Length: 113
Length: 113
Image (cartoon, rainbow over all chains, first blue to last red; front, top):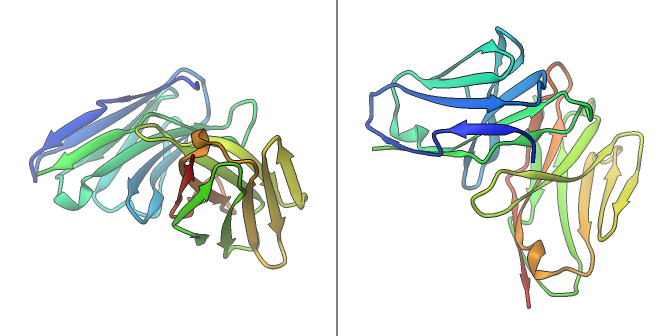
């Protein structure tokens, strides 16, 4: 398995509180991504990074921010969590030896109550 | 941006039969089409992919076909086994930077013993 670790794996938080999810890779891949997975929607891209401090918005970026201060870490922050952000969040990496293949983490199940 | 549609959303087959999942995409500039398998509680894992300069690719019991003119691609699984039961996602790589993948909404495949 690709060296991707997401933390935490599960989190319950209250509406209005800030939440940060962490993705850590040991593969030195250039690109990192955050997706959310909801029933009937597949995986939708929230934000992505193409290098340290280089990030951009994806399809569903409203309410989320990201930071990448080191190659190995990509943080996703919900500034003020809402119930609509209850979802399973996946981190992915690509840009390794097999350039286009994306590897996914195990996911973080976030519940906003 | 890219839009990927996937059908059917659920598919049940008898063990040993074949399964076919179909996807269409909208961006004629897309040139990379991977398929992912997701087992319960895990992240998606690449099972096969195809590039736009190839019409078909096989890997043991799995094959993918691509029709660039019609902008559709399909996953074929032959001699299905119970361990093939999972959710399958198609994806298309968007034109532009950072290897962005747009995913279909997924197909729940159930192989009945």
